[in-house]
Amino acid sequence: MLDVRQANEHGNYENEDPEQPDYNLRGRIQCDMNGRFEIQTMVPAAYEIGKRGPVGQLLKSIGRHSWRPAHIYFKVTAAGFEPVTTQLFIPDDPWIESDSIGAVKESLILKKGKCDDPREILNRGFDKPFNTSHYDFILRL
Image (cartoon, rainbow, N blue to C red; front, side):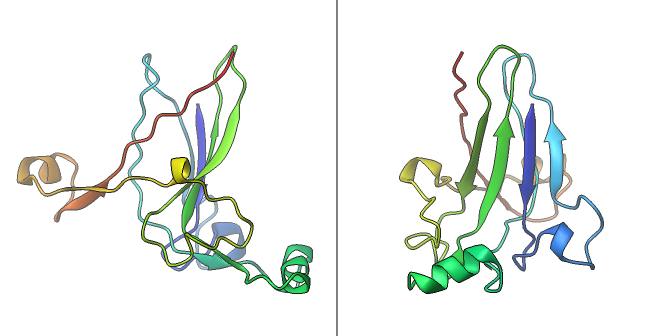
């Protein structure tokens, strides 16, 4: 099972943005019998951590900026395995090299592909080429 959440194209999470419906860009996805899954979503934007809260105050006191690079949160669970909670980062984000909380690792940066096959675009209900990415989560017993 995957619990997924992300910010929108402006860097806003639904619980912080009255313009978004409840639970927008959040979801729970059941993997197939082989552990495979597919998510169709939009690319999130980077966002700035609130400067008035405790994390913002800490960053200011140690002289760090408060920007997070674009990312998607995942919590992965399966019966009999240890859960994994992580973030996958969008490549080419301007803050990817200097995440305010230092959470970016090379292994967590998604590799972007592009699909421009007209049949695949039509099969997925899109009207233009789209980005693709692949990631394997590995759970421990």
